[in-house]
Length: 260
Image (tube, rainbow, N blue to C red; front, side):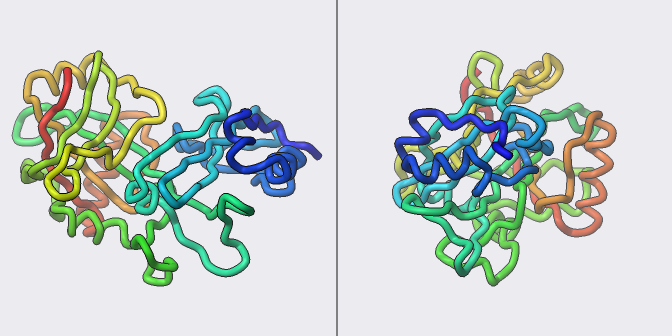
């Protein structure tokens, strides 16, 4: 049975007519998926689904999203950013731009307010949709997400009682009241590059925006896939963060605000 799938002309041009047609008839399309935009489950048998092709310098990754979240499109990203988000798999299941695409883990971000040191702080919680392999490996080393962040300068967060240490060179880009990216230092001291970039600008609450305008700092927490999840309330988000901290699977950093 054909899937309820949207494949834009730009995506078709990149993956080729044969692959696009296989997707449309359901041969290469998962019935269920985690939306690459909102990170909640989707079902291409039941709802319109967009194909989203992420392209780096050498790597291409095909992902799926609710059509109500984002349209089918090609998104160009830095190669290191894409590699860091890819969950490598081996054998005949691997794909490339000439055939089948690899499975991927996409970084998702949730904004919220966290009470630390008697003040409400603006926070972002980063959680990939699956295990993250070290770039250039086949993924046999397991989920390296936290280790990679520790090597970038994040610190373990054993609790939520003290503010995370600043991470030099990193910042959070907010423009016209919307979240656009988390920036990291460029290689060789060059201009900052996007470590995470929104497919489309993300809305934040008035309370979050007021808190970040007051402090000019954003607390960024990160945890492995499946640790935090989508929490509908900030008290539940804090509970999930505290549990991750107790279990030793939470890292954090403080970053200045870039933009307005």
